[in-house]
Amino acid sequence: MKIISQNEIDRQYACMEKVRLLNGTGKRVLVRTFGCQQNEADSERLAGMAEAMGYVRADSPDDADLILVNTCAVREHAEQRALSITGQYKHLKEKNPNLIIGVCGCMVTQEHRLNTIKNSYPYVDFLIGTGMLYRFPEILLAHLENDKRLFFNDEVEGNIAEGLPVSRESKIKAWVSVMYGCNNFCTYCVVPYVRGRERSRQPDAILAEVKSLIADGVREITLLGQNVNSYGKDLDCGVDFADLVKEICSLDGDFILRFMTSHPKDANRKLIDTMAECGKCARQFHLPMQSGSGRVLTAMNRRYTPEGYLELIQYMRSRMPDIAISSDIIVGFPGETDAEFEETLEMLKKVQFDMTYSFIYSPRELTPAAKLDCQIPAEVKSARMERLLAVQNEISLAKNLAAVGTIQRVLIEGESKSSADMLTGRADSNKLVHIPRTPESEAKLGSFANIRITRAETFALFGELAD
Ligand code: 5AD
Ligand code: SF4
Image (cartoon, rainbow, N blue to C red; front, side, top):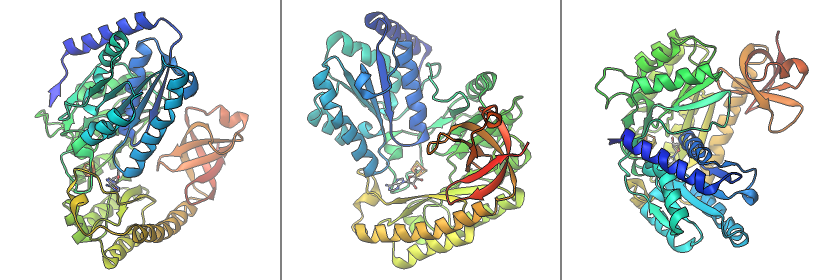
């Protein structure tokens, strides 16, 4: 792991200034993001650097001078979508040869994908792996000066670069990365190969960022890390994740704190107790279970048992009875039998998650599970997925119906995606809440409001202002 020196950061700022002078005004950038919240946070940094280089945001690919595709590698589907979008930009380049196209992030950090783009997408101007995103200004400048294609995907082990500009998508909500990378090597997962080893930011740097967000009026802060419960293990300063959460919650200001993702092997009672004692912590916990079968969990290298997982859930509910719990589930891991899949369904019924994100197992090059010869046929995986969704949707709906009649604090964020007559926000439980758009509800945009829940669906609650 490498902390990027102030000299190096200054060098990137000098490159930003040179690009700004070269480009003049009026150039437009479009950042297209695939994948997880960490990628969204990375894209906000890329956009921040682009804005410091004089670019303004483009509304569509057609009016962009620079397009960055920030890719995900976690499943085949995400890679195919990024490749297909990149493919669609070919005709834009034909119309406008000055258009610059860069592809970056997890997908191109893999050697074989880097080579695919290098060889089959000749109109892509540069590729940047996750470990080198901080060098985007230098890479763009080199391309502008020499008109050469550039491929940067080493430094995979990872680094920490502080002090680069950020252009946030929302004025109300913000991501704050507390650590990067992953050491867990779950056997299905490509993340440790493309995001390097675990490394924590210094608590002071995180606190300074959070303080400035609060001062700017941000109401929801989500701490990000592939495995936030490992926070601080590499720092030797005696601060663990629970300490960090406590410290942030002690800051003045009207905000709510969320975090993700927790690994069940590391999520501990200290963290749960801290959440229970801190009023600013959301009553929400995302705890990926992946499978309800002990054998499959071992084959996944998850290092916990279904019993241990249940114990953690029970302790969480004993400390915070109103907590909403969500999870990630993989169906069709190599060798998963019908009986083992049934164990997952049984666990869903036992735990009663508020919601789950479920995924069909997707073999990833480099990972041990992809090499197993007991891969599950696609139709079996799909059939299992359908059954899982049926079980979980019924649970999610029942949980949401139980909220009808309650009053929930909701951060009102903006217009609903489905109707201009509705506003949308998130309850403390992170559930989506829709309310009618009225002058009174509009006045609450960007702040917390008490909402009486009047109706529930599987994926959303509906309500009205309670005061
Ligand atoms: N196939 C399917 N799902 C996967 N995930 C990670 N790797 C794979 C894979 N190869 C899921 C896990 C993880 C979530 C972010 O993505 O459930 O928690
Ligand atoms: Fe992937 Fe497991 Fe690390 Fe999560 S903890 S990023 S699933 S290897």
